[in-house]
Amino acid sequence: MIRSRSGIALVGAMFALTVIGALVAGSFFAGWMEQQSGQNLFFATQAREAAEAGLARAALDPATLASLPVGAPSYDLGVAAVGEGTTVHTSVGRLTSDLFLLRAQGFRLDAAGTTLATRTLGLLVRFESDDVDTTAAATLPRVVRVAERAWMELD
Amino acid sequence: MLALVVTLIVMGSIYTVLLATQRATRMQADRVALQSNVRAGSVIVVNELSELATVPGGTPEQNDIVAMGTSAVTYRAMRGSGFICQAPGGAVIRLAQAGFSGHRDPQANRDEAYIFVPGTPSLDVKDSWLALKIVSVSVASACPAGQGAGITLTLAASPPAALLVPGTPVRIAEMMELRLYPSDDKSWLGIRPLGTGEAIQPLVGPLAEADGVALEYLDSAGAPTLDRTSVSSVRLTLRALLQGSEGSVPVVEELITGVPLRNSPAS
Image 1 (cartoon, chains in turn yellow, green):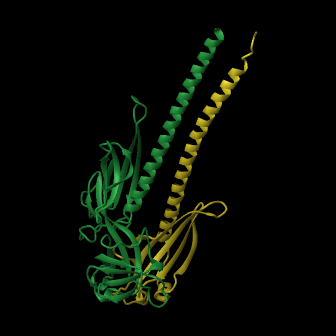
Image 2 (tube, chains in turn yellow, blue):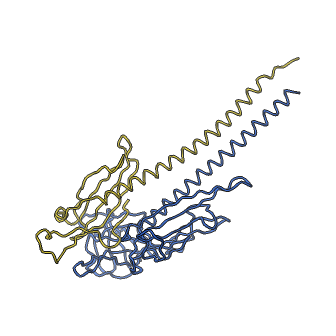
Image 3 (cartoon, chains in turn red, purple):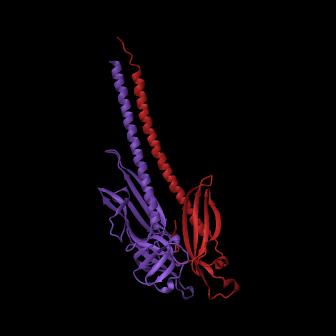
């Protein structure tokens, strides 16, 4: 009596292929997770850099600052594109008679404009009067960064 | 008989392939975890250090790097900032909860409050900050004039009343230590708050035993400096180890990060 065993090789091969496939899929999944994690960190870094750029490029007009009431809601300085998919929203608020908080919120957006990461930084600036110069142009005080611990992470 | 031999050979080959694939997969997963670990640790260190202040030749209160070494640093970390909404009197100040931002709320006997002291440029007096220990924290009382919830801090001493103008910024800081330390026969980069007496907790690891962490302190010109008041950036090198199968050479993952100190005058 002859029994055919030709199917066993196919079953064995299928089993081995399934196991190898699962291992390879697991390997790809780990790689995908790594890529996602790295990308999220990259987006967060881009948002932070956008906020940094917002602080660095904010043009603070002394006349505008002088017109802000103490303790009033922040004055909106607008939204600017910093790079591909990154924008920064800056605003400034008057804390005391001479002291202001410049706030820059950096965003990393996707193609549809959905926020992928955001970071907010702040910079304390103040009026600095020049008692020596008495020309008309000097009647408005200069705006300078406070001397110590001006830079702060806000969110 | 021939079929049996061929089957055994094929099965043996399949087993070898499976074993090799499984080993490679595990190794790759371990390596991915190691890379993620090192990268996340590096980001935490950047966030910890970037807000530090230094003033060349300044006082201990002006300089946030308290001690520095090649594998350890003790520093004053910023934990939050807010603005005075009310000064009820004595050593008590109240911050507006709405304007407070930070990793956590202030904690008594752990944190210090840094109150902004405006300078007088015409007299060549620069802006500074007055540091006072926080002895109690309460959220029971609100700020006046509809400013919402408040965080009431009782300080170790009364600041001059003239400083406590509503809107004055207050920064919250605590002393921290970051260092390479051994645990379970491995080396780790650990972190701990010094004010609470907590044991050090691992942040990244396992790292290379001798040189798993390398901290270099650079001045405004980018040159190494031993003067902690002149540091304007820190270069952090993390070397993590991945021990493969027995007899194999361990994989070393190295990540170098530059951290500019944003509150250093030269940064």
